[in-house]
Length: 193
Image (cartoon, rainbow, N blue to C red; front, side, top):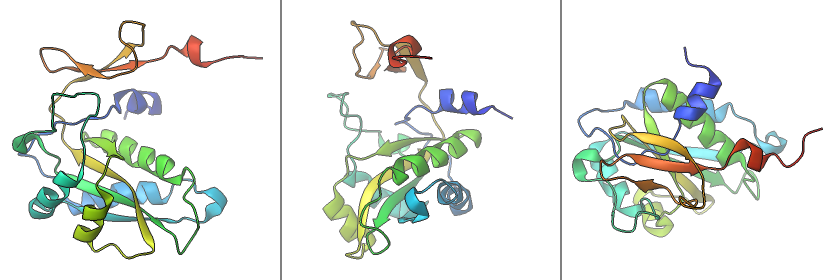
């Protein structure tokens, strides 16, 4: 069993998946249950979810998403490398006026559960909300916060130290390895008493 430190270190955004491997609705439901059990401001729990493991529905969701803004010459995964499943994270405005940071907490819990299962994912906030809302029949009191793409990874992802040369933008090398620059611990801890 992996430690939480190992799961967090492995949890990098993945944008290329094994198109031959499916993820079941049961597996996605288990991951959403982790999100459901996560902390919520004032315990209001305004998040709701729509999930898809259907190839037909996934094909309709895919064009509503923008992939990897820093990779200007890449329009997203090829058809055989697309996600096997999606979780649309919603804010139910009839429950609470705002979602605060609940969706970030819930999404991280879901993603850590996915990594524990051997899956990978990508939290996507660059979403065509109007078209996706129409596609999924979104009621007026629901707002799309983000979409989580899930599947079995085929791309290698590595954390590297953020330097002046790397900057903050993730990048790929000529072998397709995806690098994610991270600030050092010394840089992010301003004071310690």
